[in-house]
Image (cartoon, rainbow, N blue to C red; front, side, top):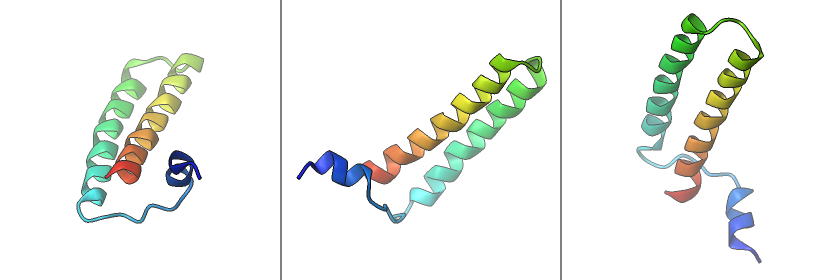
Length: 68
């Protein structure tokens, strides 16, 4: 059995303190999203920046869920 695969593909119920960490990450990312929205012209590049920012939040939250 591969422990990494098992960990990556199971449900991780939030532990004490984790929801506050998720919220802090989302709030900072939202600040950056608004800055990008205001400062960048509508374009494919802007859309990609927003998508990558969403991915960043997802992976940061996964790091917390999977490794704490």
